[in-house]
Image (tube, rainbow, N blue to C red):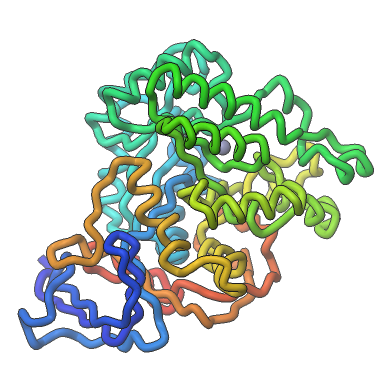
Length: 434
Ligand SMILES: [Zn+2]
């Protein structure tokens, strides 16, 4: 064995932002082997100066696409895990729209084994709702749960069949795991490549109306009411969806939602500014300024308890196709913290504790994963963040194979400077160590 088990680290005078314990204060944090230690135990810690830095435990991105198996030219488990570490994440949930689709227990197990071998990031896999994501027959949700799946989604596609969705939601009550819907009525979005509005009309590009999302969210909320099931709505981007979430909240249904940083930071005006470069092409599409403000408001109010990247890397060649033909997706892991900082922290729209609640406690709760926060004996998973660091996004420097970012050249404030997983540094000073 390495000396890992004996190494102790002492992060001194760091601002601990621990939403699991509701703590925001200057503390010393020590690490004993792979666990959080207690300072009184030993004297031979390696000191790390934490002054001016924030320390946040167990940042988890509950929506990433690592593309393996099947599309390793876009991303694989290793390149994706390295991107996660660089972005400051200690855990991710991988979406199952790979080839083959992750719809059987052995593939769920395989992903977790790979993650353990790499030691870069915890992977909590999400299994498919339907076999092959074909939307016709339920996959074996029970056996996948036993193998470690933390939720189920046909992400990339919506479950269009209401009867199948009803069955999945019914199962979720016994499994205790959420059904994660990529909410989109495919009949309404057919041929669409960007938000349907004045810009799509001016440009003559096929539009994706906000209602294509919200009609599906309303349907699913009703089905959650019918079944008592656990519903989580992925990447919300429409005012009508927010109304449906409010309705679900009033009825005390088990319904949650997430939003992606690009929908909080950008609008469809970026498509014109980028002169129709497909780096802005994403599904759901970038919306209007009015919708963006409503989404920010919903995060502040807690109506949206989770922020997740929807990291969707693609090969450079595919993103250089014409706007109509290029695939949807943004490489989001490595800009995540800078993006949410720029939206919420720079103007003080939300407290640091509440912001990071949406990347820690929020997703852990949705997925039913227990993490106690920074208490002695907890797995030593945390991120050091420099809240003052200003930096310019350069996709070419991403660890991800997907260099496709509409934030290319954007100046952001706030960046992860170190990531620790199970007591081992996975990234320091933007350098991934594995
Ligand atoms: Zn999706």
